[in-house]
Length: 219
Length: 249
Image (cartoon, rainbow over all chains, first blue to last red; front, side, top):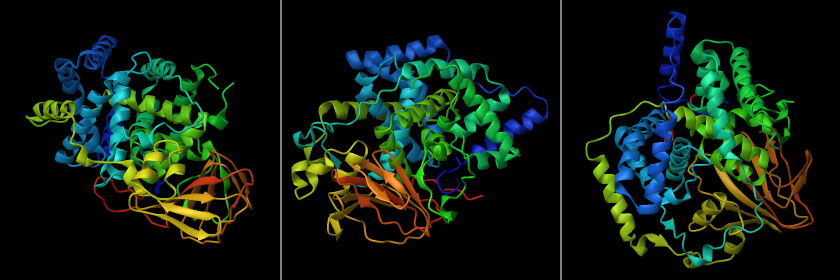
């Protein structure tokens, strides 16, 4: 889907690296998770401390962990260094502002902050130089009526996705990452990895079936 | 029993270029947009199409679940993102921004909705987010454009080169024939319309190619709001500010 998707500027580099190392028989150690459970707990504690006590020390810990990752993510999507830092700062401010909305039973801090970053970036593209609408304006309340109440069990998703990703074969894992984290289309992945399109689709499908297979029917 | 029909990563057709379709596709299903969801989750999707995904997710539980699943996958991979070098004063700058926020931002930088006077504001308040905010924000500079009896549209500033509009279709009224280069994606937000490919209700997405001149007619049970995105045959090339170029093969 060349029209709708976009390649991260380093993505072909990363993919080529995996392919090259795999071809040389090296164990391609893709860190599936950059954190261990105790680190995730610590970060969740920090967010709660920000919410409960406006703790700047807790914020500093979160900043130290995520700011470099956020900047890297934003640069990979095409921002230059200073723009990436600017957006990263806006994301971290939103982390501060929204800390009260974080529910550790629902998602890891990584997933939560990643979504804030992704959304912030879209907002940046949308809101070029327009004054912000005042969210407190009574005329803009209440929230839309009769919106269907769509709740997604994110807690369940988080646990299952991590479990499965830990155990996926490397060849599926790298493609899953290329699709869902680097945002490549299947055609772009095929070209980048030098694989037939059918192989890409079937490996991603296999990975996805494992993800779905371990989820109870949630619909 | 796994249901492939709900697997958003599977595209049953080679979906590299919607705009090359010559025949009307009619109602697009979740299957057609597998790579769109993963691309959306990663943050690589054009903002106009982000708006389509987000609005559809607000209307359809299965889309919301597909998006949430994709986002969870992306979030896990985010933890193993490289660590870029951050400037020395970044932490201090962040704390300064927090101090400024806690002290309260000056009111002059915020628009009051009361200044968004004019016909057609109330109805925008019922739209799902983030479409609601986009519509209210666009309403500051754009006006409802009357196309014909009972048909209005509001141009939306969605941060994209694609044309994005909110249509308001009164019961029984028909959108005038309009041809267009490229593809047009129309998502029913509320109410419904019908055209030669069928009947569309909230959350349904109609997909038309350049040779389709469809004329949707609003259902009789109420006003229909629909979000339309037209790519105008554009190949999204070149860097547009923070939007990374869409790379052709």
